[in-house]
Length: 112
Image 1 (cartoon, rainbow, N blue to C red):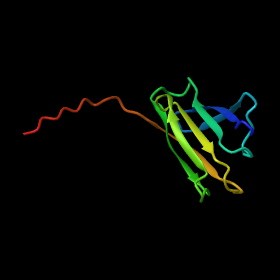
Image 2: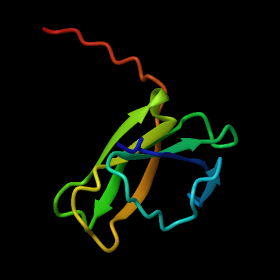
Image 3: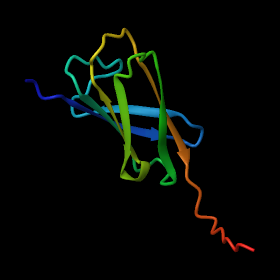
Image 4: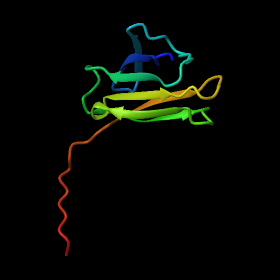
């Protein structure tokens, strides 16, 4: 049985929402071809991306059988996408989504 690979990418996002995605440690450039079940693809926000910016649920299209699953880790600074490779698709589209987290507004509830 083949051990599933993990491909790592660093992601920076500027104030205008422009993404720069850089393969790390021999990870392939896009498009990524998956041939081993349960391959993981990890995207990590770089330190030059504002600390309040985090990953949100990705937009995944052209995956009718639901081969891709995802999990947000490290307080939103990392997202791991797992491809079961159970079905053949020509091109699954994954769009990374980020957003800002506001500071706690300190809402106080006082029931009457």
